[in-house]
Image (cartoon, rainbow, N blue to C red):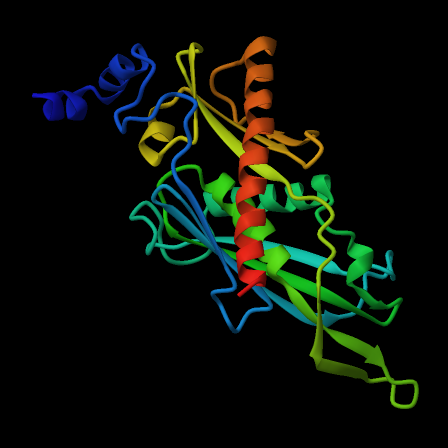
Length: 276
């Protein structure tokens, strides 16, 4: 009977749980799914990380290549993110050019990189006006189950912290780059932004870490990105139900506490890799 009711009236079925301050999967409204992080699993990349947020799984691989610096900023390099949503991760996606959701996610990640200043692009310059690094950050969703943005931001930060770049010098005689693969250094990751997403139901209930089903039933979505200092980097609210100033502040406070949880997990994982 319950299964039939859920199929016929999924939102009403869900509301019965919300009134009890819980969800069908057993979580309370402010509880995140189990988060796991693995780094360095792609040996052909210069940095990589795999993040699981419940069933939602995203892998990030970073490749560093040489390029000419921007003409208007000769002392900087580039960071180029791209989010890929293939049919492999969900039947809702199709093969071919990136769909709207993938494009929105890629732009969101690019905005987070800019607003949070994860790394200084000046650190990617090898020789001003001549040679810089470009970091291609490919984020591939392996299993889609809601809250894609949180998983992507976490995978990006973990992968950036895993990056090791070789020592490079420009030969004065030939003008060519001389690469020392035996001498690699980590990136100077200045900030570690964390994304926290919420779903709104009927302007009354706010839940964290929505699943794909919860996102489809919600009347509004909200994503808050904070940095190590508890400062806001980005707020994204793509329409839907409005939020009062009080409820928005509650979401921001939860995002700040979530940042501490994810940062502690990141530090623990990277420390264990370093000591292996």
